Length: 117
Image (cartoon, rainbow, N blue to C red; front, side, top):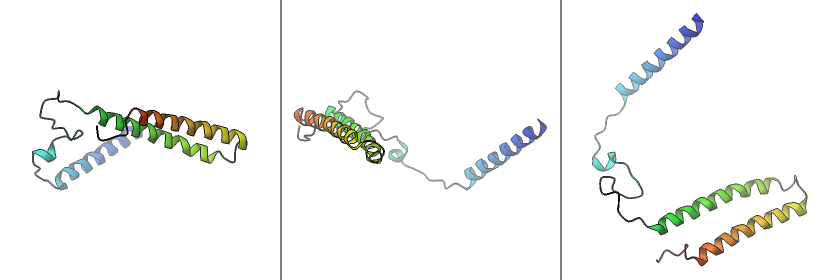
């Protein structure tokens, strides 16, 4: 028990010394108001929070996230090619890509992919 206490004290001492050294040796820079303010999708955080938000921007973001997740789901399909029956693999892949194409057609039909709104 005493050894654990001594090790904890040594680790705490070393981490405190390192934090103190980083504070002393860090490069101090004076930043202006723009660099020190948070950036949130191009909006000024110091202005009114009730300004209109482009719904089209939101929909494009959601479409990107959906297709990003679907790309992550395509990789296991590729790696399981030699592990399962060929017919099962082809039917699963065709069904998956069919769902992707139906989603893309729906987004195209709803004019979500058109930036000139």
